[in-house]
Length: 123
Image (tube, rainbow, N blue to C red; front, top):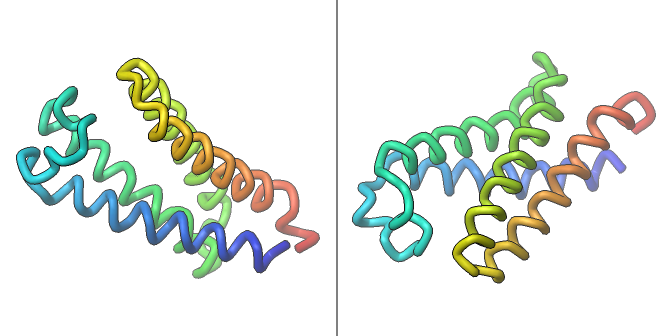
């Protein structure tokens, strides 16, 4: 179970560090290929990017360093919340393929949150 958790944490962490860094550092105009960016202000996109970057780091660093490992499931729960909000935004705009991606990531985040909260002593 621990290996599966690390694989999922690593994939989600890397994905959200990269995606968050891109959103936090790129101009809104450069992100225009993502349809959802037209619906949000540049500062909101930057906030989403910083949030995703911190969540990505939170999925990996606390557990890897042993410093406050309780923050790993907290980061996974935060990622789940971000995915619920993203799914609602995409559903309102009838972007159903993106909703499916959000639901899959939500499931993976729930797996990490549950696994690190409930199984960390037995894994």
